[in-house]
Length: 491
Image 1 (cartoon, rainbow, N blue to C red):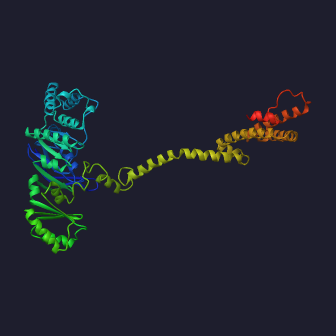
Image 2 (image 1 turned 180 degrees about the vertical axis):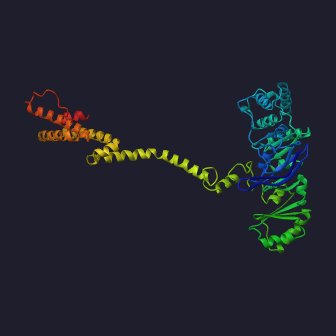
Image 3 (image 1 turned 90 degrees about the horizontal axis):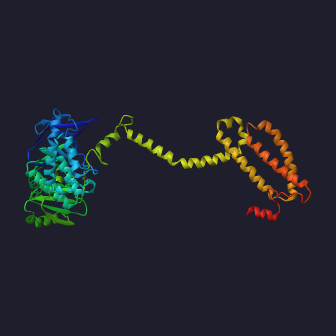
């Protein structure tokens, strides 16, 4: 069903994601494809599904070459990705109808396939239900059903049980076994080792772009030994002592993992007491001892040098996530606008700069207001040329002048009558002086003219009220000077 011979895929910069792998998957087989982040799993699947062209080598799916006949290859397989591909705004039947039309199937054929698949996945009563209201397990069933609408011979499953609870996972396993019993070939990638152990007929472990081992789960576990003894110490065993363990004839394999040693051997129950006595002769004391059967995690650790759980294996591969090796390559390239050379930093700095400018707008407005106030005090010295270059200062000076004139008028109202007389006399002189200066300075400082007019009007009113005999001034003064009037005005 799948025939890969000497497949190589290189990206720009000489990065070899897939490094000369050969792999044959038989029809009706469940094949598990494992590997750590960045091993090349996703790149390989993209080539198998015609989304990437190989650099060299040959790949044939159901007898069709992926490079020469990609359309026939696409019609021969179904694909279920990590993320759900069904539309939550459609009903179950509408999603399946849409998928059938995308494959240009006749309407009658689509209806037949819908009925058969919904029955297979126990979803016949939910055909009219909105997908958005389905549980995660039901959505995953629908994903698989839509991938099978065109009756493919091969089904690619990329993390099919990701995000599902244990019961939903077990249910999905049952459906996948049923599909396989009906002759469907399954190509499975997963981060659940027990899933591979339960479902896969054979397993291939990929690391650094190369196939490390291929075999059945039992064959790979038996290659380590019948039993395994886990020893944990207070501190890691040094290199010299590790060689002593590896030269001991009892052990088929010795793997160090941090403070622990894993000893793989036959008939571990018989040898365990001997191992403990031997440790005493070496001057070693084990903090904990565990006798168990080898698991697939032991197999994975042997061929990749990584503990699957401790390594933080996830659904992300070399195309995504914080460990994205293509992102790392991007960072190392340099500084150009066309993509590498740390161009991402340049774009990031631009975005950060724009955000900082927007963030600092309120601060700039406050500082501009303070500057405008200080500039208004220096407007007498600035001259006409500066006013023309910075008109906002001129307008600010005018407003400042009007405010100053009103403030001075209020202060005058609080003075004694004797002071008002003297101020009246001074205001006449000021009026004449301002009028003489107006003719010269009006274009440059018009606010002074308005302030002068205000002072003059105030002075004339004060003078007229002083000239009238007592009692004849019936109209109240604008700014009363007696204590009661002043109190009322303040209130």
